Image (cartoon, rainbow, N blue to C red; front, side):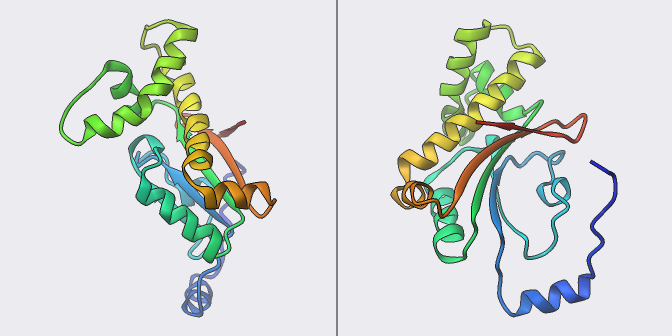
Length: 177
């Protein structure tokens, strides 16, 4: 937010990375081009594991990747990062069905149903952005529910599972619980 890049030496980063990787966190985020995880957090090579999928939903393969990142590669946190003005959330809100998107958007549908029951069915930016936050919370719950490994690591205090919503207009991350 200070508009100052970390400015670490790239050659040194590459040399360090050749010896192994020790990312401090894993991020499950959306594929949206306006939400570049490494830039958002001023991270460099070797800092983060980043898994990206439309709507930052947790599929079995992504959960397995997060299990690897935490249990075997030492990451101490998992961040589920949604963002404002999310096209996947908008598609799920509208009930879009098309090819493989149908199943992916179906993973967002519980957040849509919950948000619509609280705010009404109008697809305003406010409602869609609230749905993005609800989707982040539900994805966090999915990680805990569908992965014994992640649930146990969190219960033992070895990792934290946290959520945030990146605002594509301001560059700020609002943390969600």
